Image 1 (tube, rainbow, N blue to C red):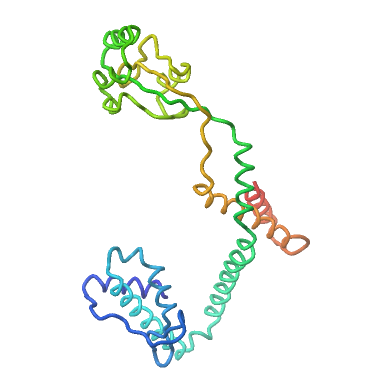
Image 2: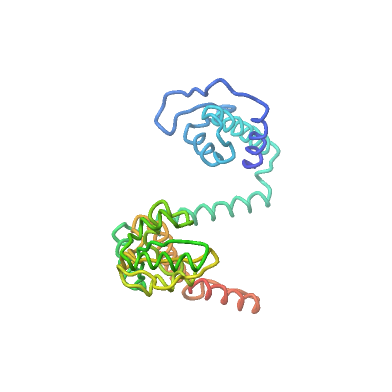
Length: 287
């Protein structure tokens, strides 16, 4: 109901301009009353929650206009809700079933947030990060430069100049047709899988300070490659991967909690085929 009302309010906003800000009565923060509908209050917390929930639909709309639209939708919702009660719609079996489903969903969300997520600390995530990094295979990366030219003969001439003591970076600035040419052919550090196979194979075969003695052909042309350094690739920083670790650990704790609650005869499924499918799904979720 609320989503349909808000969608209509967003459509209305394309033709109506709101100029007047929404003023509020002074009460406790979060419980500040911004409006009443037949004596039922709409609080600042409720209004801001509605704005936040649908902010993506408002685009670059000014804040006060968003608030006005959200308030309009909340007013409409409360008026319709009151009218529904007068019609006795809140006493139907379908409504009561829906409310029970919504209550279970909200209790599920509350349990996940307040019981499962509350157990997860930064220290726990950092320990898991260290554990995963220790298990991960080490990756080598190289710091290389290259000179890209169109013909094999031109690449061979550049190699001769290098053999005679020419500076690689200066030759790259002078001859390379690749985008890194103005930077002396500098490609920075890269790991395996980031370059086309012939280029990558040649680069990782070189020792630091060495360059290819024969041109390396790829779809881009002919390369002369020099490796400046090799090192072990640094792991992804903890702060960058922290959200994924949070999800991983939360999922594990969720499974632990659910498995404990399912022990015994808690779950009884009458249909054998459905039981088999249920068991298969649960096994897959545990992997």
